[in-house]
Amino acid sequence: MDNSPILIRGADEDRWREELEPRLKYLLDAKLARQGKGRYTPRTSEQMSAGLAALLLAKGETRAPRNVRRMGGGASKEQFVFELDGDATGGAEKFVLRMDPLEGIIETCRKRESQVLRAVHGVVPVPHVAFVDGDGAYMGQPAMVTRFVGGVTKPSAGGTGPSGVGIILGDRISEALAPQYVENLAAVHRVAFSPETLPDYAAPRPGTTDAALWQINYWSRVRTDDFIDASPLLALTETWLRARLPVCENPVLLHGDYRLGNFMFDESTLKMTAILDWELSHIGDVHEDLAYSLEPLFGNRDAQGRPLVATMMTGDEFLRRYEQITGFCVNRETLHWYRVLTSYKLIVMNVTSSPRAARDGTNHQNALLGYLAACAVGMSETLCRLLAGEEV
Image (cartoon, rainbow, N blue to C red):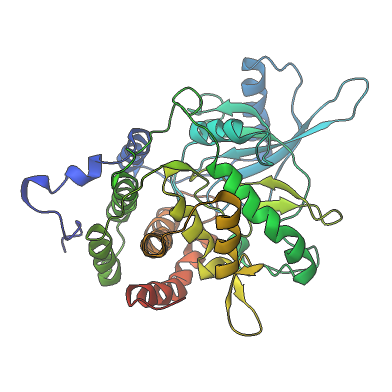
């Protein structure tokens, strides 16, 4: 079966694969070239210690890493925590390492992630970047090291499913965090950026459909490159999206994965201590981040059955607070387009990239990635309702 996008024909059939951010195109080209060429073996603490020692020494750090151990989480990245001895006046310093396996639920770039963390540092709470091995010269795979940040992603007494799904914050925590959740998102969207601060990023042209086009091209390429099985729903959705590309007048810096489970907070003060997982960040339409937060997968419902953003507030309240803080008027039609895109890309992650990595053994959490494919059932229902114009 021909799995190319339905609206592309003739001499232009493959041109869409080139029309996306250059760095992201490079990453997808490299991933496609290495597919089927071997399995991934999860690293031991001893292997990580050796790689870290070489990386730190090359960056001018003479202290040797100690107590290197695997850290929970990281459906797409290997995560370890370690310490460096402090000076005479302080204790040991704690760090977190994130390293790419061969494949995962998403293909991203540690160079880009480190650049955006530095760009937003001091604007919103984020981990401090300490060391970067962007090409994997020392660790064997691209990696980034940040200073450890205290806090939790969910109440200590609460349960959760994979990747933050199923978290319930409760009324007291939600009341305290909801304003911070919106204020921090608005602050990200106000961050000034340039080729000097974000050299591995590209900005879509203002007043064009570039922002939307680059996104549908990227995720459609992921779907075709990681192809597992034909999906009439995804093919239909791609056609729907391409026929309705919205114009973005003012591209802004986006987090790209702003949701419950991707921020930490202090349970005593109820202050957000860090916004995490910036690997999907890019420059685009503000409606994209807003739509992502509205995805039902990352929330729950109140007693009246209304969907709650990040389990904290209704969608109307979330958008109202954002508009009050920023003075920006949310375009509901554009927001709906990006809600459809959100469903499309989440399903692509879960029914193509995840099961492919699990099948080929190219990730350290193959069982989890296989399990995530089941989430596509609920997400497909959401997508069908969005395509039908329903409120979800």
